[in-house]
Image: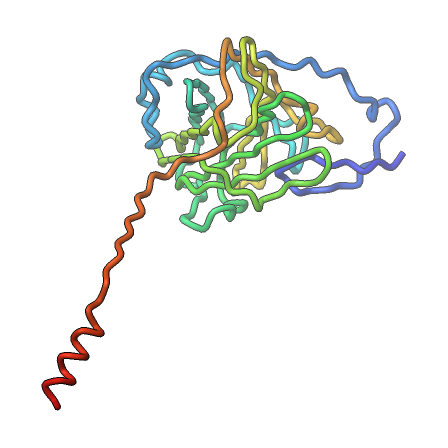
Amino acid sequence: MIRRVTFGPPCRVVLILLVSGSAAEAQEFIRPELQAARVTQPPLIDGALDDAAWQSAPLPTGEFLSYNPLYGSPIQQQTTVWMSYDADYLYFAFKCDDPDPSGIKTSVTRRDNIWQDDWVGLSLDALGTGQLSYHLMVNASGVQLDMLNSVAGSEDESPDWIWDSASRLTETGFSAEIRLPLQSIRLRGGDDTRMGILFWRRISRLGVSVSWPALDPGAWVFERHATLHFESIQPRLARELLPSVTYGRTTLRPAAAATSASAQKSA
């Protein structure tokens, strides 16, 4: 049987594979469960993972597996992820190890132009509905790439949300931090709020993209999100207040009187 298989964003690769009927049957996916940690001291977004927020245990993501160009293969490059939040922001930290740090490809370029670089990031279904996801990626120089992904269409790179990121090269690879304002996304607040999340990474020189949870062939990214739990979180209004002052003044120019006096002297 010939089946069209799409490996999902952001690989942008479509293959035609020959698969048997049994191999084409989708296995039941059990969503992993993650717990977000609330912090009282926000991390400094500078690319260094020395903040108190990152000294606790990382998320139990396990091994990232490839989804492009092959599916299900492990790689030598290990990725460790931390996540925390407070009343205003979501925070993410990534430790991207590489056995050959000199091979990491990065550039200082315009926003949304890092597809050819090494990058790391996340897909966040903030509403937890499986309908809309925010994709945020950052390269080893801190340059951002963001997209809006929905079940109604493909990836849309035109939205540019307000969020902060920083990265730095290290002796073992590179590290990255992301700070996402709650007012930049739509979410459902309250106790035991649940979001969908997936982490991914690109190793440019190998031409390999990996993710956790794994992206199965033919599965959409929404179908492979892990469940991220928040004990309590509240949405923020998606607006900014920019204080400004307007000053006005009205004056009367004595132009008529001056002109009359000048005319009398001339006469």
